[in-house]
Amino acid sequence: MHDLPNKIVNHLGFVMNVNLYKKEGKHFIEIVVPLSAVPVSYHGVHHYRNGSTKQELKGTALNEFILRKMNISLERQPTSKTTLEDIDEGAVQSFIQKALRKQRILESAANSDTYIILKNLELVNEQGVLLLAAVLLFGKNHNGTQRTARYKIGRFGRFLSDLKHQDRSY
Image (cartoon, rainbow, N blue to C red; front, side, top):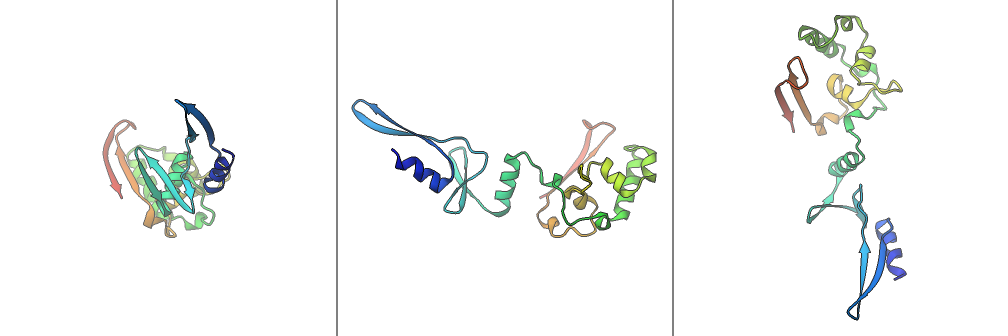
């Protein structure tokens, strides 16, 4: 009864309650397994339970699982190596012109500099660092992010609830 909790901590890295019970003259052990927000690592392999099945998570699937469980979206993460020089001004201006034609932004936006436009589009964090979404949308070079990025693009009417068309890239 003393060794089992220690072995669980050593192999799995978290504490579980181990209880000894007696029923009808027979002893049995109950191991209370807490709900885990992250996959369980056993001998360097990460496992995840989905209903009645156990799945092994590796690479990108493991990263996405952890970010999703922590309620973190990848595109909202700051980019450490990207600056405004990595943003395609032509792509930003093309976006502005199309948004103006569809009356999705104010005309004053056409006179704003790229940083202000990106900030107003919430593509820059509070510290002034570009988010990955800015690179995916307007970057000159995606630095390899394009290979694993998935796009879900929608065209809306005058209101967000008026979805006219959507396209996905998976």
